[in-house]
Structures are given as C-alpha cells and as structure tokens.
Length: 332
Ligand code: DAH
Image (cartoon, rainbow, N blue to C red):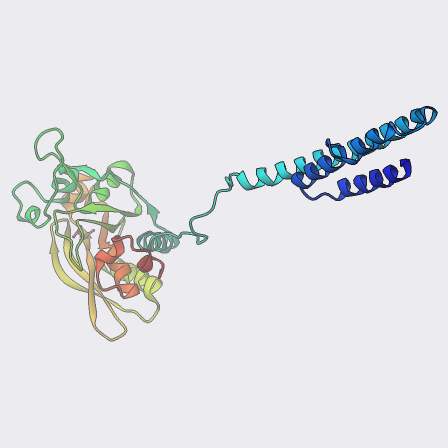
C-alpha cells in the first residue's frame, strides 16, 4: 500500500510541476488530496494494517502528502504570477507619444525669399532696419512728401487704426516710413534695407493681398547718383534671379523720390515684368529725416517680396501662398 501511495505521490508531484493552468492544478489537487483522493483512500486503508505498522504508514502518508502539497503550492504561485503578468501586459496603457507625421516642417516660401534677399543685401554692405506695423500718418505720408489732401494718399487704400486723433494712426501701407525712422535715428552714410509686412484695404485676388510684404532700400551718402541706383538694382537682380537676368528703369512718379522710376526685370522669354519703384530721395524727405540735402544725397527703392517669390517660382495665384495648403507649400 505504501509503495502504491509513494508512486502516486511522485506522479502527482510531477503532474503539479507540469500543470499549465490554475484550473488543471485545482483538478489535480482534487484527485490527490480531495475526499475521494488517493490520500483519503490510503488513510482508510490504515485500519486494515497491523497496529505496529500503522505508525510508519502514517508517517509515510504524511510526508508524501507534504511533498504533493508543496509541489502544488509552488506551481500555483508560479502560475498566478504568470497570469498576473499577462493581465498587466494586456491592460497596460501605451503612453508613448506618437508623432503625427514624421516629416519635418520648413520655412514658408515668403520667409525663404525674405531671408534670401536679406543675405544678398547684407552681402552688398546693407544693414537691416525695422519699423512698426502700426504707424503714424506723419511717418507713412507727410514725411514722405505726401501731405494731407495729396492725391497719392487715395492710391494707397489705407486701413486706419482707432487710436489717438482720428486718422493719425494707420497700418503702414508700405515700408517707406522706415526710411524716415532710419534717417531720424542714425547719421549718414546710411545703407539699409527694411523688409516687412504692409497692409492695404484691398480685396484678395491673384496678384493682390490685403496683407503682404515689401522690401525697402535706402542709401544716403555723399555723391550718390542715379547710376549707383541702377547698378545696385542690377546687382541684386542677378544675385537673386541669376546672372542672365537684366533689369531696366522706366520713368515714373513717386512723391518721395525725384526723379522716380519703376524697375522691371527681363524674364527668360524676353518679356519685362514690373517689380517695384525707386528713385533719388526727394529733398523734402531728406529734410523730414533731419538730413541736409545740400550735403547728402541718396536713392531708395521698394518692391513686393511675395510678388518676387511668385515670379521666381512661377506661382500663378498669390492666394495659394497664404492658403496654408501643405500640398502647395511642400513644393518649396
Ligand atoms: N512705397 C512704394 C509703394 O509701396 C514703393 C516705392 C517706390 C518705394 C519708390 C521706394 C521708392 O523707396 O523710391 O508703392
């Protein structure tokens, strides 16, 4: 009887070690240690033994039962730990941040153009000047030889700001007021460019936006002539568009320059495209900037940055640049 029990106990220990689930282990426990299990049977069988043999038999049964108990308990804690680990893994929240797109962004086409222009002019010896976007009527018009009532004011479609005396504050309609601020701020010789945002009460269409960007240039020195202006524009056009591109000046009128001109660039197909205005700084403007026109002379120019980018990249509609459609923007 003891031999049979020892064999059964050894099998039960092996089975416990091999059990692959808590359920299988419970079933094994029932078979080995339950009311109808083989230990119960063995205990019942003790009654049939001779009294002197019962002690040894009892000890053998107890030690075999202890081994089976221990094997089941060990395996149960192993299986429970594994089950808990599986459950934790299943319920784990993945808090790793997932990038929406792996693609890196890049500067907007207008910013790229603006920066390329700054590089070109800085390379030619210019410094970068700035002025406010909300400007006084005096800096935007009067100081630029456009007094109140001057017809040129009407051409600008000005947006006025509700601040101070009515009509005294506006969103600058061009970057030219930075000329005046620079002259009041520093002594000649002056070689500056002023790129910046400007505003007009315009309806958006293929070639106009109510908010756009200009680049102003101002040079004040001794013995500055129209030839210096033409040479500077030519140098900038070939630096930006390429050596084979030509520029030309056409007489025009601007209140702040005398003489004034419009400058065009020649495209690959031979056609001329209008780019901006320029001229010799008007003596009244020099005086408004605190500079003596008898001693100093200078030239100025101004053109649209957005329109320049449009020409360089062959964009048909200015509005595409500001629609924030990445399919458009990613081309540049
Ligand atoms: N401010 C002018 C405009 O917005 C452009 C311009 C013309 C600027 C002639 C100048 C200039 O500096 O000399 O239309």
